[in-house]
Image 1 (cartoon, helix red, strand yellow):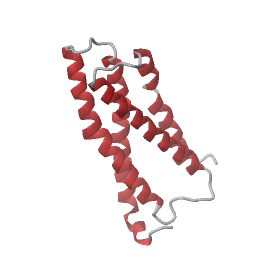
Image 2 (spheres, helix red, strand yellow; image 1 turned 180 degrees about the horizontal axis):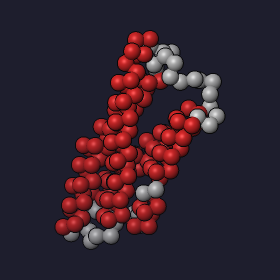
Image 3 (cartoon, rainbow, N blue to C red; image 1 turned 180 degrees about the vertical axis):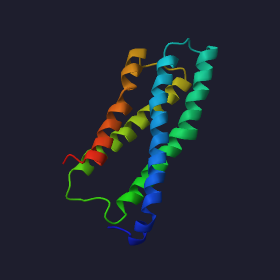
Length: 150
């Protein structure tokens, strides 16, 4: 199903989608890095309390709205005539990538709540490794959309 009048808005929809994705990714790159730092500071200390504020603001003011906009504009692009060739296979890879990014977003949001309660179930090493997940997913998504290997 496509909506014909969306074709006229395609350049704007694509531009706004990319802006939303860039903002989402900036936050997804930075939040796990904050968790690396947070996992090394004493519970209840000044640094821990500052990191809690930074993490909450980053998630609520940037990452969550950017993800919502990226999803909404992405769905709008899918509904635009001629944008997705449903017989091609690349969009399956892209879908796996953005669903993975959304799931990782949920993992980060849950971890923020844990840090807010002064819980530290994951190690600094875990967060250092997790910090690479958005990069790997972004590589998958970009290759699927630009190269369309299958």
